[in-house]
Structures are given as structure tokens and as C-alpha cells.
Length: 163
Ligand code: NI
Picture 1 (cartoon, rainbow, N blue to C red):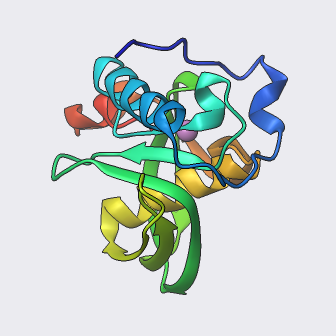
Picture 2: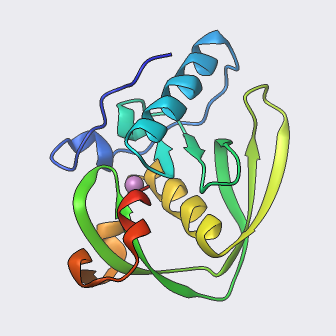
Picture 3: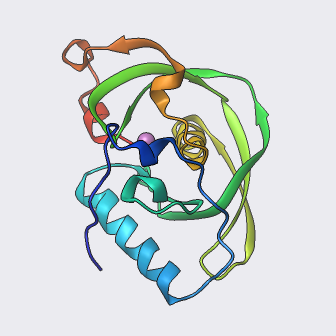
């Protein structure tokens, strides 16, 4: 495993659309392992392939429950709305309120190419939505309602919740 370099906003690759994964091989496993290591080291709670310079629709997410490896993920159902503060590992030290669905159902493949569905609410729904946006070159900045100065925010955890 190896920690990969996280691309930041100045890098135009973040605006590119990623391609679906069609090969479930050693190379993909290596990428997923490296992405998880990179996310935990940052530290962050989500990381998409494009953020480490790979235009594949892959992401890793761990909001503190367990590691999810999301391949070709897409939202198939959403319900309600929530407004929460978000940050992105590719836009360091910037935080803002974003409106997302309150509940999502996401269809995806695992590292063996096996189809799965996940239903999520709250923070996990935010994380899934944020990473799937990365697949299409969308950054949370595009959806910010209001930027937040973290020093005025009580939640100290927030700094470690970049995606
Ligand atoms: Ni992000």
C-alpha cells in the first residue's frame, strides 16, 4: 500500500468526468487499498479516484463505521433534504453549508464486481452524494450556500470530516 498525492483545486483533473470501471483486477485492488490508506492518513472520511489523479468512478468512504468501497456508484433514490457543513480534501481549509438529500439509496459494485445497494441517511448520505459528485467533476464549492469560518463552529470534529 502507498499513500497517493491528493490533487487540489488548481488541478483541472478535478473537473473531468470519470469513466466506469470495467476491469476488476489487481490494479483496481491496489488503487482501492492506496485510496483507503490515503484517506485515513489525510485524515478524511471519503476520497474519490479523481482526487488521486485517476479518472475512474471509484471512491472510498468511512464515516467511522466501516470502510465502503464504491465502484460505479450512482444514486437511484433520494428523499428529503439536509443542510450540513462540508469540507473536501481537494479544497483544504474551506468549509461551507451544502444542501444534500437526507436519505439516498446508492447502487454500486464492490471490488469483485458484485452488485450491491446501500441505503444511507445523515452523514453517510452526504458522503455518498459528495463522492458521486466527484465522479462527474462537481465540487462541493459548486453547491455551497454559505461559507463557514470553522473557528466559529463548535464542532471540533468537523476538521477531520473532509471528503
Ligand atoms: Ni471532496
